[in-house]
Image (cartoon, rainbow, N blue to C red; front, top):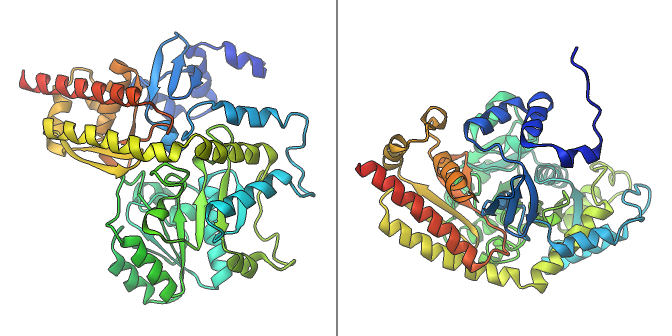
Length: 448
């Protein structure tokens, strides 16, 4: 038997890339390590601040992936870190008492929704927030059916997968929850058809589909959705795990159509990119119906939900979003970036579409054109791409320009652009200039 090495937490700071990779291969997800190796993505970052990362060799990288919406404040925001320092020596978990930090955060979130959604349940992730929302809908309405959209993504726990629109995530875990009905995203008529069936507890939907491919619904869609859910007495659950907290240029994306959901799910950036926290927020009426009685108040709970460190980080995040005017800046920066990307689309035929809102944008490539570019590439990635052409863009941006971008597993021709809201205009230019340089090199390679 191989001799075991005894590690302490301090050892993690002294490991080199090979040692980190080996430990991941042995004790974590070996398939993920193989994928990272093939893509030459096996980096270990040592420092992070704002939109910048530094690897063990001291190289600097620009992060425009932003943890897929988890880093609205960027890496290691000082206000969030300071909020955690203030808690040193104070209780983090006190399960048989009332937390002042959870109390203040719940009150602040109620204010953020203008007093419409006043009851919060805290957990540690977006999937948990979705699970809480689904359970709330069933117990509060007494109905059993859920409606969800094609290409939807709400997490990877069993309930969340049951209302997900991507079969390769769902199939290995079948059978999932029964009575879940799929409809096209952005189609209010399709929603009414399933609501007419009756017994619908809730319609769960993202204001903009993130992993699904950065799909923005038609104008007026959510006003129709809100009216239909009210008419047929089905709850409207909005999953703003990715779109919330300023990402689209409003605190919540539903504000664009001046509606309010019955249930709101938050997570990702709520913890300032440092602490894991999720929230399921609803009306007083629904909460009382589901959990207001002393015999029901513990039907749903989470051990780490509402812990002091997570709540303090969330409070600091909300203060910073408002105090630094990041939400207003997001709208302006998003418009600027969208305009620059549209100019790229006019110049390069390989770009099929540019879409999104605020700093949640998608850049989609033509399948045939991108396939030709792929085979013109000399980096030997053809054997691992297997149709996922956006991986080629992400890999080249990282290797040649030290810029982190994200691709969408639901759409193999699309990269997702979700930088921290703190990104500067010069950094936005750096990203677009690098992207144009890469596209120019593709075009030259294809011509030759």
